[in-house]
Length: 187
Image (cartoon, rainbow, N blue to C red; front, side):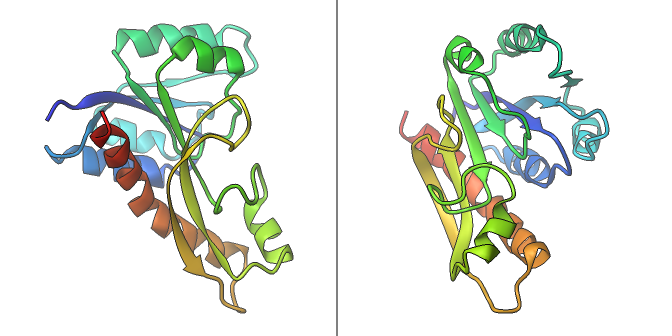
């Protein structure tokens, strides 16, 4: 199997990053994580990049030049897919067009419901009975790209934002690797 070079964008804890790094160590998994990008210098997930000796860069999204810097680095590391794993910054249309390769995102709801932020509170406020996570291609509209896969769970009356987040993240660790396998089995 030819593994594709991947870059993972994070902003926080990095549990999906850690999971993907571990999965990528398997020879049958379709990606090698060659680069990690964070827009938060204090993101806990950067520890996983350090622990597994993966190069990483911290970007200042307030700078107008950060996207050009990223495009140079993505080319330098021969990245063929970007995985957005809790990256809390909207990627510009210009960047999407200029990268011109696959970008996928994991979102903590069953899209197309509850796009954007504050997902768990909106799910509870809407009294949903089922929730989950969705992995989708990134396009120019927020959380609107073609769905690759999703995972579901039932919401209990006792669930709150914290328990929803725990349940969702547990499913994300299955959904993200499954989505990557699907993406590259089609090629």
